[in-house]
Length: 186
Image (cartoon, rainbow, N blue to C red; front, side):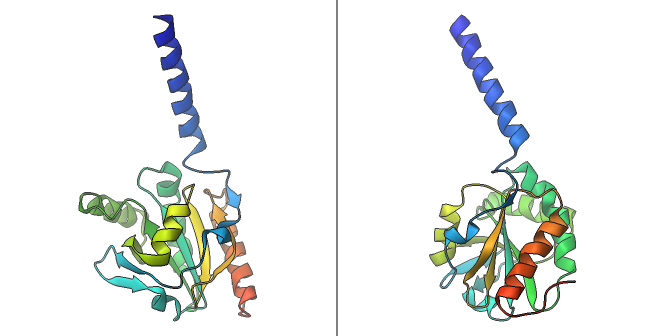
């Protein structure tokens, strides 16, 4: 009996700890660039279109946020991401990759979360090639990376949900824009 109580106590403590810490690592920047580049892939969008590395060529910098419905901090930051995306200049785009939206049964829930958050940009929900490989290396959600028009990862990105999303995203985007020789955000 004491053994069962101890197991329940340990499991309960682990559950509470995981809920308090979110779905990932400590918020902030990290070596997201070690995840790899996105040179060759094809992905489905939530809207039913295709998205490939060729979609990067139209922008100097693409911000890619990886998130999951099961990750509270991911869902909590979606309104901030939507707001930030609306402020971006024409040479920068922000897309999301939902890690559990590939299944038909979850697509409606993903659409609903994005609608509620006010995000009307591109969301990818399944992929192959370099994007599938990169996704398999993600250890924490949310994770945000930046790529140039050739699919090369720029800077450190962001792992976790930053306390001041607008500042953190502005900082990493400005760093990426500077790296490709473009004017920074104001």
